[in-house]
View 1: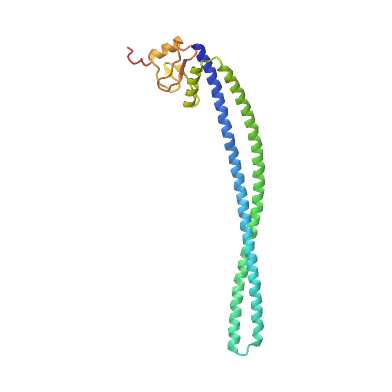
View 2: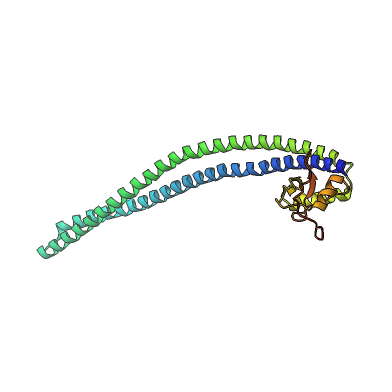
Length: 249
């Protein structure tokens, strides 16, 4: 049984390395996703600024057409002044022309405001385009680096799994099945060393009876608390203060 435990310890060491590498592999795409989000955010800012700038330019163009119509109407009214017969009609027409000119001034200010804001947004879009280009280049570099690291990690995992397969060849299938089941349920740690009578997997005391069985290598012993397969460390001796077996004196 000691030979079986020794082999399981080798398997556990390999599984620990495999799990660590697989966790590293899971983290790499997460790091890449951060760069992807930064790129998409930069693209969205560029799209938003460009779209708003184009919208304001269209509004300014429409206001310009209205402004041209207003100017033409004012000229038409001014031309009518020469045909007015009475002072009352003349004064009324002057008031109307003054009102049209006031409206025209407001429109001119609005056109200037829209044009200025549109040009501001276009400048913002040009600046953000630089950010987009930089973010794209950074994402591409990070993507290439991530792919390279993933490839290297996958190679290491494949090698370790091959070694694991070889290491489990002579282990009893039932014992290996127990080991694998515990490995999955206990976060990748199926074996636990007993040190000073304490299971190092859950820090609970091991009974004297179980310690004796482990030392005698009579059979596989599971921790009564965490179910991990127990083994004594090299040169370890049972602790006389270990918890007694139920019914033991």
